[in-house]
Image (cartoon, rainbow, N blue to C red; front, side, top):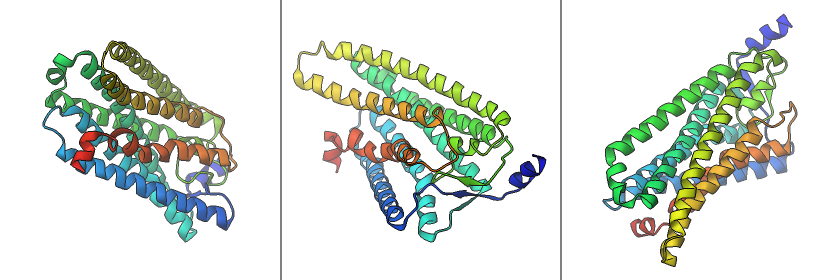
Length: 303
């Protein structure tokens, strides 16, 4: 056991073997990943450019959307280009440091995204339930402070999980059955006794995320109560169209995240694991422009 620990600890790289076997399937996956990446990159970059042409007031919805789009651009750029490059060149290796950086960056950005969604739910609550006080509460300084806190909390979250994951000793082959480094796949390579700390971090994080989701639901219950009192059908539809996508995406984000991090893990390649990875890691960034911004009248005018 000591030799296995030593040999694996001294490995300088991991092998990412997430794509299915067969040239046709690999080509299909590479093409799909490339299209998703380009769509997400262009759509979110367009949002950032268009928000410079926002109306003078209010600031917060556009400011939060700009930060959300920036998160998605960074998040999808952490994993997808490397996986595409590995498949095209047929070199599936990633350095030990590169794996650490992928884990840190992705968890950092995912934590920031979820914190920002919590802030956005508060923004929606203030806009609909406290409209007369909205510009006073959600002023420029308050928005800057909220966004700064979300980025700092995400950085702490990413550091915690990166340290917890790479504090273990790995054993066995250095093959990761995933197209990027993720925590569940790496923990399958570690000694079971040493996985306890990181799984404790994961369980605590999931409980905290669920608590935040409950707070979001409470805020949206208040929002929907106010919306149902709106006499104008157009006003009611606009309010629902603002809130429902936010709650839906958060629910999908949490459910797929729970299945990824708390579901059963395997040392073997699985089509289901690949599908869940695409669903959890790639789909939200590409859908963000459609769900949140490009259907907005102000964005169409700016475009």
